[in-house]
Image (cartoon, rainbow, N blue to C red; front, side, top):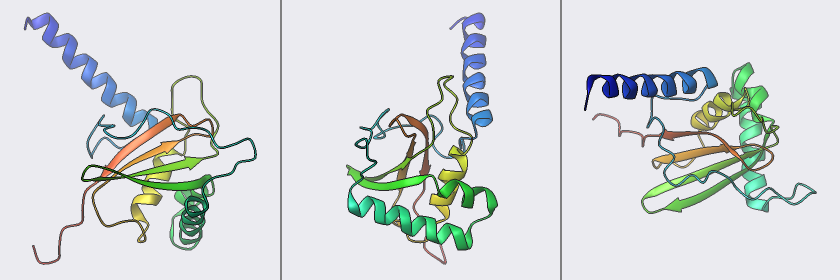
Length: 155
């Protein structure tokens, strides 16, 4: 690889990481890895219907956040309309479906990082390693993160 090309690759990687940082997405856990998280989900029907169990999980998360979360994540949690849980091989997947507006400039909605943080802090989330995707009201993926499995005490 020539020095010029190597410099171009380094600049591109740094620019991508900078964009994620500015967008409020976590780059600490699995940066850029969207494995198993689709780029879009089907939007709910025009009346906003989600599967009952997914809406119940969202209500439970909102209730917990209203009592336990800090102001930013607490405010963001009200935008979660469904918490959909699935599996891809050994990895548990979670899709946070929100009513956040779709931004046309490619930048995620401001509250994306808070949504990921409030879900990560929620004690009722599954204890297995997770991949989380946040989706706007139109079903477009606006953020992802990975949560490592908890380590047993005393190790």
